Image (cartoon, rainbow, N blue to C red; front, side, top):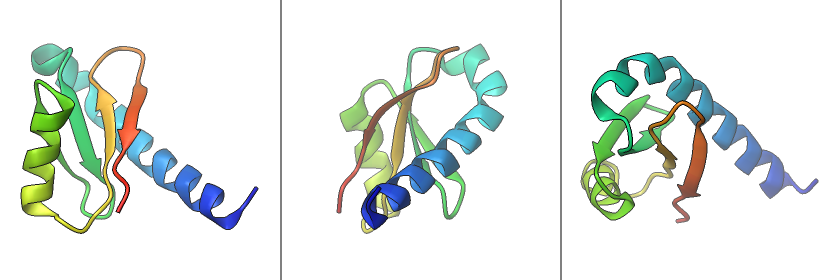
Amino acid sequence: MSTKDRVDQHFIERCRLLYEQLLPQLLTTHQGQVIAIEPESAEYFLGETRDNTSEQALAHYPDRLFGFFCVDVSPTVVTLREL
């Protein structure tokens, strides 16, 4: 496994951990939406689509990476934003 792969895996794990902590409260009001998580600040952004959520996240942190997940009982990584 390359260094980049290990860094990517660590990033995904941090995002997933935050997502799993937020999931119980998110399921009640945001199921089906997309969440963008910035793991350094633990800040997150919600929207109806990946594009809408990405716009919100980038407005706050234009030079950071985000993990995108669909808010559902089975967490799925939608995508990672590449710099």
